[in-house]
Length: 159
Image (cartoon, rainbow, N blue to C red):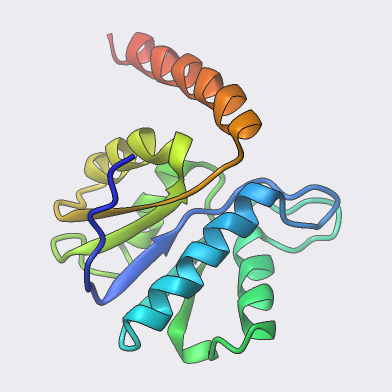
């Protein structure tokens, strides 16, 4: 998986469905990757995305913020996009928060990165730097199949 991340003012961290109000291992891997990025680039800000709330009523973005805050990341380094219900919405809404023409680091799971980059480009982001979060071998294999099905579905809908 390509990792071409370098310094950018913002890194977009894509949310992922919660399980009983708790982050999955793959979401935690995204947060670990985001935190490491902030340590390497102390001027950067994260945009935490995801509005899907589960039974707890907390959005993916809010859960991510709370976890990173517990780890010592200051609030001024985190912006929330907590209205989206899909990857496409993540980028559409984020394009209203930051300039999509400037370089941005994209943090998502390794298996999700290609489709996420396509969604970002569709929303007008033009300078996307990839920073994939690693997933387990089991998670990678099962999710790659899901990503293929989703991509085929999107291709069918475009025709």
